Image (tube, rainbow, N blue to C red; front, side, top):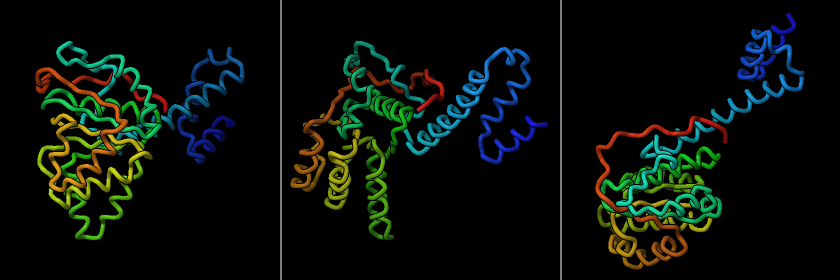
Length: 253
């Protein structure tokens, strides 16, 4: 009877994982061999893991990763790709995100740029870091619409918030004056405060050619190119290869 009352109280307090663990312990006679501290620790661990997994699921859902199953442990270091394994290992600490540093990933179409930034995005979510992903074309369209319907300032405010903003496929087409200014505003608002990761088929030294307004091009590139981390993916297209499954299960922030 006392156990049922405890279970009811745990349910009212929304401690469902703890309640489930208590039921499990009561169904296993061997649990009587453990001390109170051990059993209580198991109850707390169950609730802690449940909350952290819920937080991770929420962060992953909000991240909108282009490659949601991407994982740093599954990056292919085929010699043709010329990826620096030591560099990836250093970046996996995510200190560059915590310090507001940017990441620029370049390479020909199909070389795995989106996978790489998505893998960092997933790793960030696993560490409790907020992430948001946009394709550059879609983002600029949303901002253009926002100028007309009054949602521009709200969207711009939302773009400031994530610790890591992933901008995928920059440079697919030239940016007209309004789009150039919008892109500049995004970079300006985040520079030095929050990290931005940008992928592009173009080498960084050609990005300025995508801006119709060359003054804005200089202002954007001065912020993005200086002090950023860079990865250049090479090799043949990887499209059509079997998708990998994340090596890590949903665990802990």
